[in-house]
Amino acid sequence: MISIPQTYVPCLRWKMGEYQALLRSDKQILDSIVPLIEIAEIGYDFEKQKVIKTVDEHLELVGKRVRDKLGCRPCFVDMRHISPAQRMSDGRHPAEHVFNELRSQSIPAVPVFRLSQDEALFRELQKCADRDQRGICLRASLEETSRADFGAAAHSLLRELASSPSECHFVLDLKTPNFIPVDGLTRLLKELLGRLPHRDAWRSLTLLGTSFPRTTAEIPLGLSRVERYEWIVYTSLAVLLERAGMRIPRFGDYAIAHPAVILKDMRYVKPNATVRYTVDNAWLVAKGLNVRDHKFGQYRELCQMIIQSGRFEGKDYSLGDEYIADCAVNRASTGILTTWRWVGTSHHLAKVVRDLSSWSVISSSL
Image (tube, rainbow, N blue to C red; front, side, top):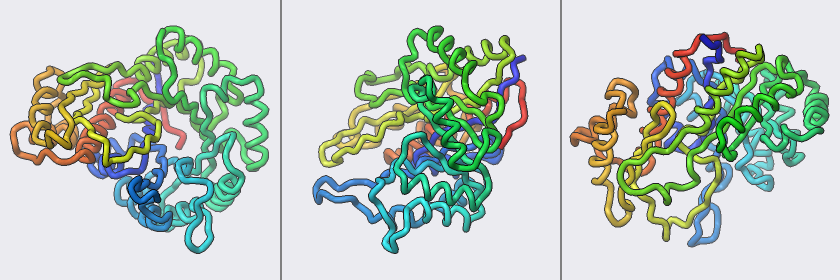
């Protein structure tokens, strides 16, 4: 039995579909995750040619929402989607406001740093880290980590923050690499982790990535299978690392989403109805017609496709599964697009946590 970290690190953009999934997850699931929360970008009104909210309005309830959905559990918080030019109406940096709000709600939040970020954000996060004394999180891309000077750059960052690897959580963010061939990427990651500076000293080590497509436009109507290469690579990598006696990182992904931020003019967008359902090494995607012209009633048939696939886990598996079962037989509404994001994310969180728990457990360091 391979000993892998049981703690799961889902990267969730802090929008309604994702945070409602946390609200609708049971205690066992929430206790097994440390989410990497990306504070979402401010939406844009293409018709009026301006943002739809002020930064004050956008960030007003962030602390309360995290507390309501996650409780007082730890999380990583990344501010990368907030424009460097944004300031609160009183002149404060948005990061100061966010971490003050999280602190007021007793949320043990850890700020996320990157090797390249604007100076004002860096200094504000540094102040937050110094005040809270919960350590920091360094999030680095595959390209950055592969560079010959990465060790020197990481050491320089830690020195400037007066921190040590034992106080720093390290996230290797693959984003959406070319996963094919799987064996090739797996060997590359083993080699990269083998020469990772401070590999065994980091407070925690996470491998994050996804193969979920940027859009579902190329997925055909009906029921399709989309491979979860990040899970396939991770499980293969864990075997190689175990055999080599090397540290196995935590598993992280982007749940049922792609990491790219795509600003769309909703006056012209016609999104298709989709139910995204995570299975062992893939997602089942039940896809219907666009909801603007064909409405939401088609979700009942899509739910029936998932149930009849032979891969449905049953309505007691998660609240997302319960909703799929009830919608299929007209006991729940067909909802809106946000509904189906929380439904799919709720099931996904439960699936990953249970799959990780089927491996032997080692203690979490956070």
